[in-house]
Image (tube, rainbow, N blue to C red):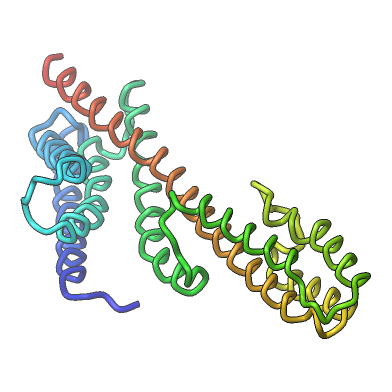
Length: 274
């Protein structure tokens, strides 16, 4: 995988911060009486640095919500969000000496691991999603338009079946329409195509080959058009699934990130006060 210069700079910065922080933590753990703790000056420094990084991570969402902000390029913010996000967890672990003292701290760390893992998953997803869509959904459309496009595909299929070649026998046309109604239309109409033969590309090829052998050549052009319509429908299915996956990811990552920042602030206030 090729990494551009900007990504490389952020990656180097993140690795240097993690390694330098770990080296400093080892020294701190060796000289600190009673071991490293969050309430010591160095422990607090790690905690402040980690929480500051969390605030920066949260500002990316705020920047997206307020498009009039022009504080740097969006790509720079995204790369900083990714690489500095990787630094946040080690610094927070250095802050607490790799121990989770108290119920609030335990809840915070559970949230932290969820945010961290979902963030890495989201970065992988957003990196490979464009390539996946280009390869598997060449006719990608706006997500909100998918129901409209699916309706158009079904209408086109209905029109094809209703205007079959005049060269075909009446009996063949009748059987063709019956085959369409029992095999192809349910696939085009279904909201959930899982389990249907035409939803799988390999099985779809076999189904259409079987249908093609059962009908005369005069009906093969219409059958080829219906096969193309089903292929487009499968692209809509793939695109819809990927957007659903992104939506689920956001439902996990964003609320837990907000909860983490809020509870992190509460933790800091409680720790400083008591």
